[in-house]
Amino acid sequence: MIVDHAYELITDDVFLRLHGLLPHAELFLKLEGLNPAGSVKLKTATGLVEDAERRGLLHPGGSLIESSSGNLGIALSAVCAAKGYTFTCVTDPHVPRQSVALMRAFGAHVCVADTPDGNGGYLGSRIALIRSALDLDPSLTWLNQYANAANPAVHAARTAAAVLREIRTVDYLFVGAGTTGTVMGCAAHFRRRSPRTTVVAVDAAGSVTFGGPPGARRIPGLGTSRVPELCRPRAVHRVVAVPERDAVRMCRRLARSHGLAVGGSTGSVLCAVLRLRSGIPPGARVVALSADLGDRYLDTVYDDAWVTEHFGAAAAARPRAPGTAQSAPEEVR
Image 1 (cartoon, rainbow, N blue to C red):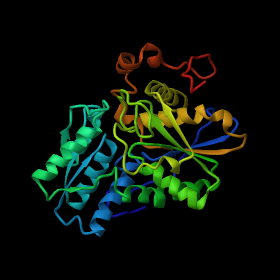
Image 2 (image 1 turned 180 degrees about the vertical axis):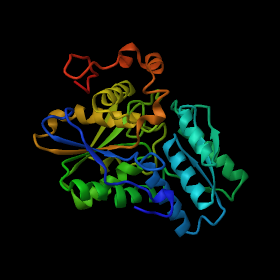
Image 3 (image 1 turned 135 degrees about the horizontal axis):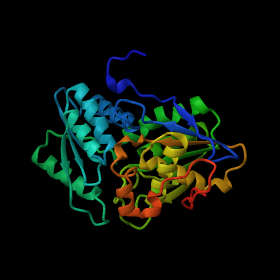
Image 4 (image 1 turned 135 degrees about the vertical axis):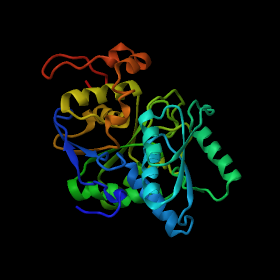
């Protein structure tokens, strides 16, 4: 494969068949982190930027601004570097330091909104900061991933289409919900092309996206403290909210049992699969989307001290060798 731009190196055909987690069915983990930006958000970033270019909202040498909890900020930083745009990412204190460092390596400006909003998160505060920046500099282009139809459109055309192209028969699809762009795009595509597929949106406990009560959240990638305009709850068949403690334990278990370190959202998605496992019939084909890998979470999800501080010593306990008895979170048993 030879391409002209780094943002074209999107791998949409890599799936890991996971053994042991769902013994009576086939479970495929779609690995979205194997691209230069390290996450599924590279597709979002290219989709948003190219849509703005087509609509004449973005011109050579232009300046963009966007809110991100990490992955989209990295992806937009990379795309803007390659295309010659100036990019400012508005983020919050929960973003991993590695993510901030990578954005800056790509030349992005990073602003941190450190005042929680009314629901205890930072999304409302980040968006308020963006609106203030737009008032001061009207030449800025805000892509607005939370309301921009180009967000779900790119995932309908690429992410969902790739799942059906590679796996073909899909009985269940589990997708994490942040802005809900990925899950809404996948739901739209599957509704047209594979209406028999059950689409499950996976949220974080404490997120208000699908109407749950607000609560503290520490791991970026899933959930919001403000309902995204893109969210259409009726577009999916099920919503599963996973406590972050269980997501952390699943991530750490997967690293020890499968040699794969994934991000916190992937841990949540796999916990959701196991929570619904009793209703998944034998022989079913299940696909779970893994938004990113675990290298950005070494100071959090994979750090014993951090996990113990926020979730207790049991969550930080290292899984025993395969074949020995071990405790597990409710969703893992």
